[in-house]
Image 1: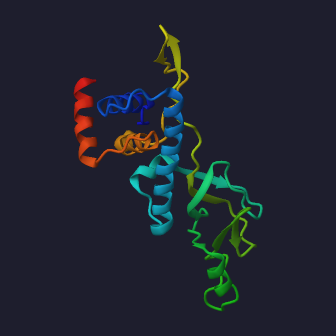
Image 2: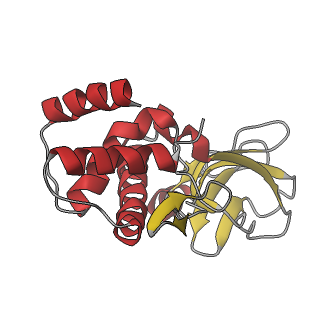
Image 3: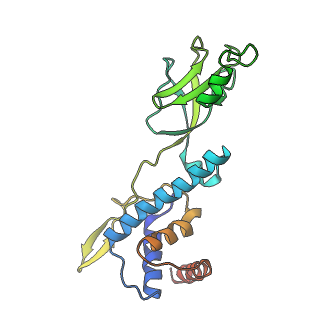
Length: 207
């Protein structure tokens, strides 16, 4: 379930009021929301790059697509990081360029049609040996594709939430507190973890 931007907006206003920091304007909130989404995405991407494991919070960005047979195999439009590649019959392990250089001419380790390998470069995915022309299915992490936006109309000189033109966060709602806390930090409100929990409890009771 996508994280509802209005819920985050109302929580940020709730905390700002409790902290006697005044009202956070929609424009200020939207800038902070975009920065927060990028920040959380970057943290999860760094975890993947370091561990080659998909954190549960990254699952909204998992994608799978069959790639064209031409070499290099062009990246899907939303491609960010390769997770795995395979033909219809075999997995195609990813190597770094340095790893490929080390085994390219090895009698025992060089890629073969039976046991191909791939290298990701800036212009696509290269399958080795080049004679392998089978279709390749790539599982990958997709890019952020939207900018979270709390949109509104003006009613009696006050902004009123417009759900039809607003854009929710791309993450699941289990990241509510991390994203909300990150937004608060960007608007100059730093609160400790225990206070986030207390405010969350009070906010849910008031909702």
